Image 1: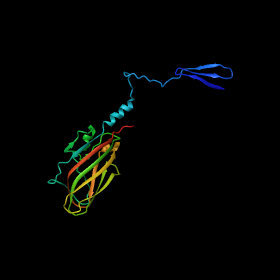
Image 2: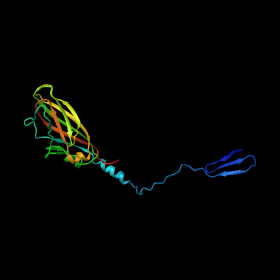
Image 3: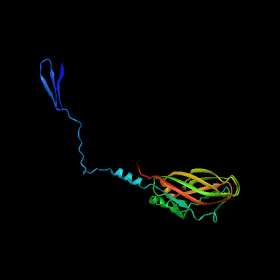
Image 4: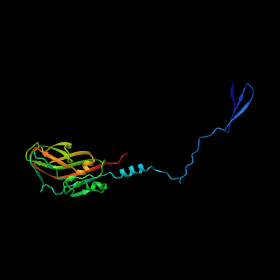
Amino acid sequence: MIVTTAENTSSITITAISNGATVTVAPVSESPVVEVNPTALVSIPAAFETRVSDLEKSGWIYFVNTTHTELNPYTFQGGIEFVFPLRDDNRLDSNSSEDLKTFIDNNNNNLNPSNEGDELEMRVEFLIKTNLANRRGKFNIDIGVSSRFNPRNFLGSDNASVSEPISVDFPMFVGSTFIANGGELKCTIDGSGELYDVSVYVRKIRHGEDI
């Protein structure tokens, strides 16, 4: 049988009753102290540095079509598909990455992404007047393949020849085909009319790199 007979901050002494032998146990340590060298260099993996750089390439941009105004609207015919007039006549780009600044191509009236793997959100807003009340419209994006993507529907004005504000969101990702062919925003409305004051907000949610 072993019992404790003495204890202090530097050691613990125990005695075995059977033979009176005394054994002193090594000092009990306090909480370990970790020393930090303030001048030591910390190595950051290259992949982490790259990902931080990618996050810095996010941002948003706002394009405005000043060509088609209420006095000079874009006209369309009922039931006939047309390429929606997205234009980079004016923009807010102080919070934009460089690649977003060329996202709309005025020469070809199309979408012009440049970085594969990007995740984007695009919002298109405009005013519309139709010759008949309660007209309906639909969007999709054509990137030059057999299938269209991002189909969207919207309602026109309740009253004929009265302007109606429209806002439509398009979440999207950028693949190699989208980059190679660009994209056209196609629109069809089941009635004739006109549209104007078009603006496009584009936000890059994620820069296309592997995490």
